[in-house]
Length: 66
Image (cartoon, rainbow, N blue to C red; front, side):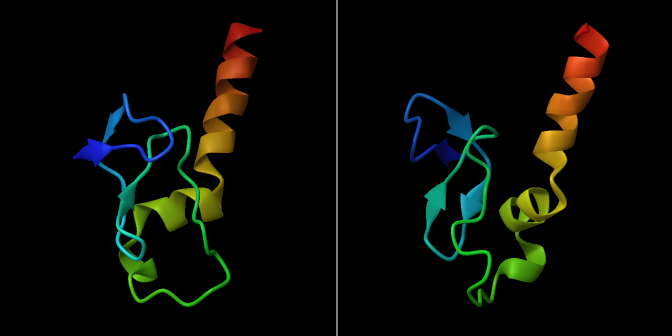
């Protein structure tokens, strides 16, 4: 675990192996989605930002809370 590069007060397990920094859930987005990365096939940051999981969670919360 490390500290988010944008929010140093937040601990996070998500690390960009290419650039060697950590990102929290709020910042979880690939910095270079169109540039080759040898870590991409196992990267949770790229996977979650590509699939839009964070946007789906926000949509579900909005629907539940009205």
